[in-house]
Image 1 (cartoon, helix red, strand yellow):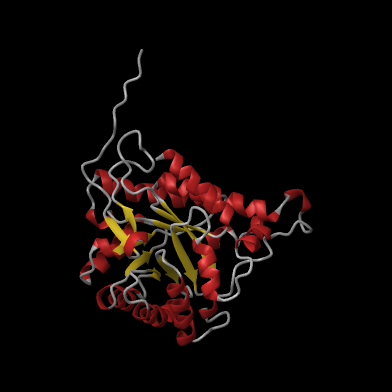
Image 2: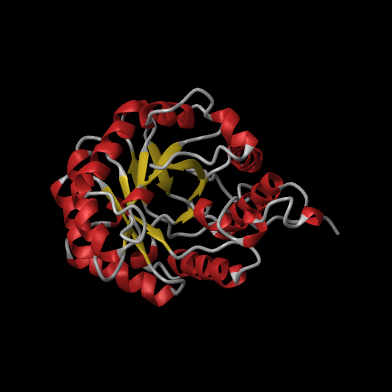
Length: 313
């Protein structure tokens, strides 16, 4: 019996959110088919891949990372190297030094660092704060103000601090904001509704549904992404028709499998290869589930995932 292809194209679609400006601007979302299902219909804006480094610098103990950033010392130099990595479509900058449980750098110092990075690159910029609710409520509005005209994306807006961050980022300073919920479709929808009650439209939003890495309850995470996309496309749920971003880098490089040295557990082999494997497998699964953008750290991971996307769409 000959194969008969019945394309599954939905009347609903994921909304589009534009990051950055000019020729390098990046559009997330817009699809009305399942992720990567280019055999059913055109994938309007293929999933995007970004590279992340922190204000404390890249992990030069990893040979591949050290080679990518060779000769770069200042944040501006690091940013320029980051955007030159093959396959990169946006740069993510993590303000790790602002964490009150770490260096607890001042808001002014953190904002100056963001400004240095933003002025050095032409690709869209994504900024991750301290991941401390109170500190981010103070920090991220100042970051939004400093980045006027950049159309950047600010992560880490949670239910506990979303109001000040979202109003500053979107309404006052023309940035985009990402709501972060805890791996639950109802919590994700609730946060998006709260944004809408502030007058913030979907086109100014990206959603982070919670992140983990393969082997650590990851099936629950990607099933949440799938449920969100299912509701958005099959039930025309406007509160969920928002692009999804998956910040994978920090998760992948902070678990035992990527932290243990070869001296500690020699039978596990290369630490660098382990970390790359975790990043790539987590990113591919996230994209297959419906993520519109992934944030990675290692240049080899970026190149691998970007090539995969290009060949599938």
